[in-house]
Image (cartoon, rainbow, N blue to C red; front, side, top):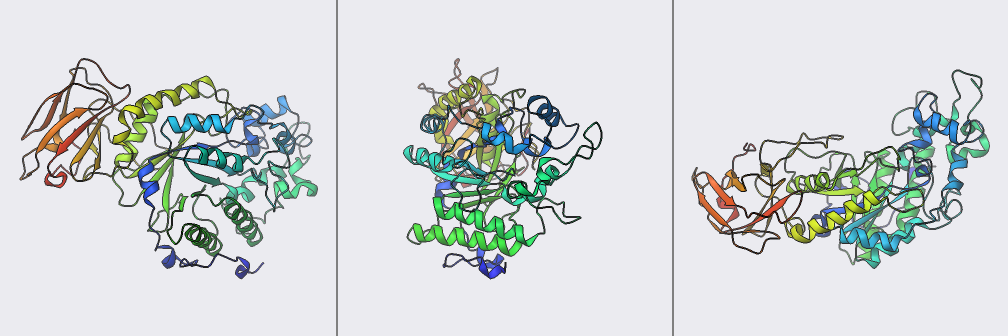
Length: 491
């Protein structure tokens, strides 16, 4: 199919790098800071974790062994037999969305299609979809209605670009044992619309070089965007397929402007440096410093798909991640793992409840804030990059956010045993002219004892800790930019 058949909405954005650099991230995203993600679909059914649809075809992998024991050999019982088992019989999107909003989410992202090539909407280009099979519901549409009902912005995630090469393992066979050489069901031409046609030799990278698949991806995702008009689109990887991907992105931006009277409100996330074209996403990791452009971390309180053997992250980990990310001009998109039936485990609901309590007391230090001249201080400096998200924070680790030119929030990632919080970044030395005029502890109604001098601000905390996991000082100053904190994080 010629590339000029990628018809896009007319508007100021064209499918070129230079044109896409007109993009400016909307304030709603910069103010929101926290989103919840539903990374959910048929691959949750075996309760064996992420990438099941691929690894069930990898002889020797634990998910292959699980499939063999639970469902049969993949030459006869393949992923196509898993799909009808996904019923979503306890899924209550309105109830879940109310929990997510209360926990502090300002936007919600629905999985639209994972690498398993199964669309969670009434796809006009793919018979393997959730309206025709499995739960027989418009999952994306029902999530969107629930998000709108709670006043949340709505996004969709697409993992389709990588599906073509990702799913090629389904065309293989066992390499040893009694069924060695017997093709898996993905090799059956009758199911190529699920498992794809065979890739050319050497076509094994994350994104295929096959132009036919590029066009398939464009049509499917354009249908998704045109049908739902989401505020956000997430791609699991870099922007796919060069000119084809730029065409889709220009279409997304132009269509969004048309819906919003010329004001661009759309956000595109992908795992590639922004350079002014979109909002960069980091999977299960953070940035090591403040970024001039807004960015996002996507991570999960468990495995990406439901895994009965996975231990949930604690609320302390979520709050510490959030504070660190927001201090560096980022947002946190948090996957709350759903069971195959659509419900949440008690542990997941507990995390949401505890997040609600913390945000109720400390949310003003998160929402609608901007970074200061330094993101924080303390002994723990997070290493930036994908898949780096476990850091042993303490009460001496502070993260800063600001509002206006007169309010600084200092979030301490713990409660000091001596009930004293020193903030060296507010030192009056080195020619700094800044002056602290007031200090309060969010969630605490009493006054605080504090002193401000050449060594910084020292705050004496009350006997009782007002919030679990992290506490926030709200510091009023005459001019935030009159301070000169060190460029290196003090320890």
